[in-house]
Length: 138
Figure: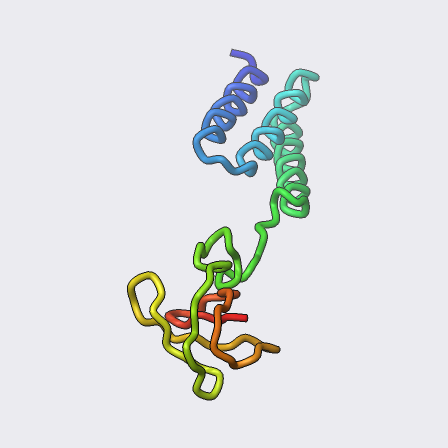
């Protein structure tokens, strides 16, 4: 078997593994291995093939990491309505004591804290964040 066939078989195996993981990092390594296979097709020796595969794989991985696909959106889970479905829901507050109250929400008593700029009067409030068992409303 020719050297280039081994490189492309390894790249194909990584592509199959990539389908199971859902990240793009194995894809970047597969691109590097494919580059090593292309160098093998030109007839270069094994050191140049491995060096090319390593350089291209690392460069592709670093480029992916700097792209928008490699950066995970680092949002605060306490304020992200995609993570915490309580955010955006309404609660009724009967009375406040120093910016804190207790309300019945989803069948349980919750501590409620008034968010910055809020007015401590009885009424309906929207949940803006959740910190532990405390609802931050505004």
